[in-house]
Image (cartoon, rainbow, N blue to C red; front, side, top):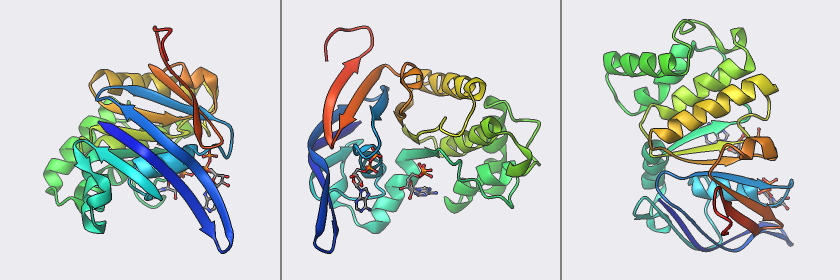
Length: 229
Ligand code: ADP
Ligand code: ADP
C-alpha cells in the first residue's frame, strides 16, 4: 500500500539545513495498523506529511496504492489526498461554525456527491462513531473525545483505503483515548490501513506494528506477536 524507497528530507532555511529524514526505506502492507513512535524532532511529522502527500521528499521514491507519487502534479496530488487518504489530527481541525453533520459532509460536497447521498453517508458514519444524536451540535458543544469522533467520521467519508492519524489522542483524557483507539481498531478490522503517530507507549500497543524513530532514522520496527523485526 505504501512503499518508501531511499526517502530523504532536508529542510533549507537560508544557509541552515536540517536533515529530518535520512535515507528511509519503509513498506506498509494493505490492512496493516502501524504506530510510529519517537521523541520530539525525530522526524515523525515529516514522515506523515510525506506519506499524506502534504509535502514532498528531497529525494527517493514513494509508491502509494500502485501510484508513483513523485510523478504527480498538484491536481493529481490533491485528488490522491482526497480519494486515498483520511486525515485525523491532534487538534481535531473541525470547522467551529458548522454543525457536526456539516463537518462530516464537507469532503463529500467538495467531491461533488449529491446532498441526499452525502447526508445519508454522514448519518451512517456518525451512527457508527456513536454520535447519531449529536448531528445538529457545533464542535464547542462536544467533549474532546466526541470532537475526535466527528473528525474520524469525516476521515472515513470518501472510503479512503488509508487513515493517517497524527497524535489523535494527544488532547484527550485516558477514557476518551481508549474509546478512540477501540474505534481505530474497529476501522482497521474492516480493512483500512492505519498509520498513527503517538509518543504514548500505551497507545502504540493498539497497533500491530510499532516503528520507532530517532534522529530521522528507523531505530526499531517490530510486529506484534513475532520476535522478528
Ligand atoms: P517530530 O514530528 O518527530 O517531532 P519533525 O518531523 O517535526 O519531528 O521534525 C524533524 C526535524 O526537522 C526537527 O529537527 C525539526 O526541527 C526539523 N523541521 C521540521 N519542520 C521543519 C521546517 N519546516 N523547517 C526546518 N526544519 C524543520
Ligand atoms: P499539531 O500536531 O501541531 O497539532 P496537526 O496534527 O493539527 O498539528 O497537523 C499536523 C500536520 O498536518 C501539520 O503539518 C499541518 O500543517 C497539517 N494539516 C493540519 N490540518 C490540515 C488540513 N485540514 N489539511 C491539510 N493539512 C493539514
